[in-house]
Image (cartoon, rainbow, N blue to C red; front, side):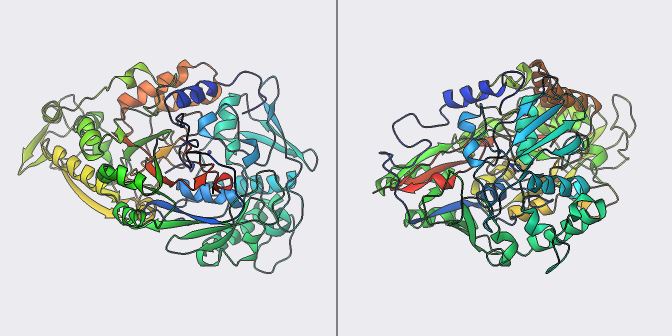
Length: 612
């Protein structure tokens, strides 16, 4: 899930992210063997103009959003990767060189921060226009900002106290320049990598309307107007089958436009003939093909039916055969973590999940080494905390590096028993309710049983096997796990942030990490996923100390803040830490060049080309 992805600068101090870029490169996340970066043609070749290609989506991944403001259920990383080819973000990064934004792929020049860190001034690039011929201006950025400001509770990336709350004033300086006064001084590295990347100019002169056929106005500058405009645009964004024909989405400023966008997930982007930037597409079109399972994709790959696909872990023994068919095979590692959130607000199991000893016992029942080696065929890395485990970085604390909760079902079983649980008919049952050291804990009633329900994404044999392994391990400590599989979008839709009284709060555990659960920006802080009331803190985890540490990671330039965050959450267990799989093992036809596999799961398909 990336942020959406989940994706700096002329600042007052050097960038901390320089170290990440160096480690990513040192760890081999981009190719150093003479092939195109991350894959593609071995010769590199001279870019050819024209032609088309097909790209295989992950199992059951179906793009379902094009609007530059995401809402819950529409935050998968592939939505953002496709959308920014049509509507340019203010800034985006290439994880193979995260020391600075990829300026050609964005809409603005490097940001300039004031010496006190309390304001930032941004200038848009000169040559960008919308497809209707109008210039991309500061007013277009203000339009995006106002819609987010007045509809922030509906924005999937909203985190109380963060963007847009941390902007005290937005000022249009001129057509190309705008300034944001901030509520206080922030770490410029964090603010650019984690806040400014969310912003995107939107065509105010075409979209600032309240209903179909309505007159364009400055409605976004009032709360009531901004709400009406937002509701109208969100309604239009829900009509996937009309993406290719709706005049709203024709007003693009990116290197591609939408040619096809089906409700089943197939998307075709066509080269934008009206693009005026300096990062124009080489190809005439790219089709993103959905698949119901990794095996279904692999069957098509073996027939040569996709140009850029992937090999499931179970089929890696066939790598030589695939290479013999004219493909280059490359592992695509991600700057990511994988986890299973607990729903701490679930009315039935929430009080159980809030007991740290329960979470410790569950974590000790995850055989990460076996899952990584046997189920993922060494294409996954055990994960022990909130900072990506690989490549090693200065952000990772010593406590996370050495697994705080090694696999030990006997120790886990004893831990549960020591807190007033007895195994009855194979299921641990609370027999000593109360808040004492040897009792079940606050809110856990007499007779409560450790019966958990897990909602998991379908389409991956590795994920299915991993969940069955987890089910087996948990049964040994008295936890009965029921597994329900659904397509990825359904899993995300059915495990929202919720309150205990909400009808949508029936979910207990949720897994959406077949290709990694969360892809970080360059600065891997956790304000979006682990801070109290964060928009993508799906399980409603809340811990005052965690909040205090997370706040320091966003405001302090002291590197120890991130290390403390890493250590504390590795031990406090806001989620079940799981092995992080490679994003995929890619198979790319040797007739394709210009491919660079971004550890942050971004894509720049405008730079892909055919080679003779």
